[in-house]
Image 1 (cartoon, rainbow over the protein chains, first blue to last red):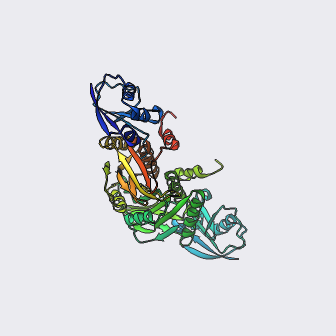
Image 2: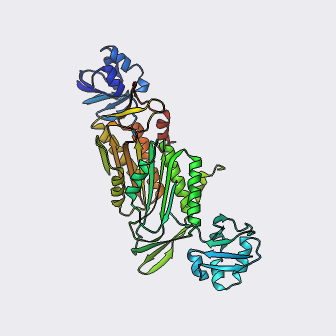
Image 3: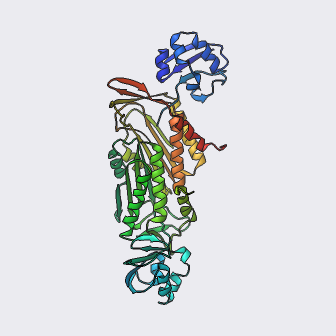
Length: 83
Length: 83
Length: 151
Length: 151
């Protein structure tokens, strides 16, 4: 399936792009991360520590083991610092 | 000693005056109440239940057993309902 | 520390903005405003607030000082009206400023809890067929236990 | 429920007043405002806030709905800016209205606690010699446990 993958804050800076179209068969958000790691050093730095990252599927916060089936948009970002 | 005694809210309505000058030898605020009770029916109604009343000596909240020595002004009133 | 006891209405929006502008170094501003609520059943015509001139100012200053001793505040404002008010009117406001939101929130709640039960104000409600003093609530007195270091 | 995510500054005083005026039947209004604080040491030149358009609005609406389900509120407002801000600038505000002060306070604190850690905003601080993303605080995540019914 084809997904829009978005990156925010320092994650975006490491990856180098704010969003990209990805062709994947990953079952979960965590599996997608494993595929992304193969794309280069920036990705490795960005995803070095999943415990300090958050993921949203179709604009809703989920855990990394959440299934990707039917998803259109996946976003990765650091913990939020609003307010 | 001579004291200004003040009454507020429904206590004032029962007593009939907002303030009066009282000559007393009462040792505490509670003793002063006992003397005031002799002044008539309005006072009896006003001071029927001390647990639902508050007292201030010289504009500071105190207990009914607080000493009156040196006081200039004593005020009696119901629990406050500000805010 | 800015304490005002007045009969005149105050401009909540302007006061809130001016307070916020004056809080150098603050990251968090909390305001609380109390409004005259209408009564269920017979409509409220007038809410009348009596107070104890002299003691009121002292009691509010003491409460504000206690809040400033307890939390690191950049500032603290209390405005409380007395006299006649109508449903929807603003009765009073407090504002607190601090570096951190927890301090600003706690200090504002502390000011309100003490102001409710320790500042000499008494409310009277007037409807077309009745006039009655507002009774104090046990829950307002109970709210103070939250701030007692011995609890 | 009024949720706004915007780059432009907002007028805190006017918003607070308008919110209060619109709260029919409320006896208590609480507002919280977050300001850009200066940094200790090297002065902060710019605070930049990035967000996730689309998700931000949804996340804030969800938080406001949760607050309205949990407390009896006459209304609830969230305004949050993104983009570049300077020390002293207002970043965001929330306001809650309720019959009772406890509900208005708790709902405002709930909104702030969730907004801090569950709405997709990220702050970056720019000084003359450095640019750094603001790290999230463990205490902000911990603050959410207060609202967990299973605690």
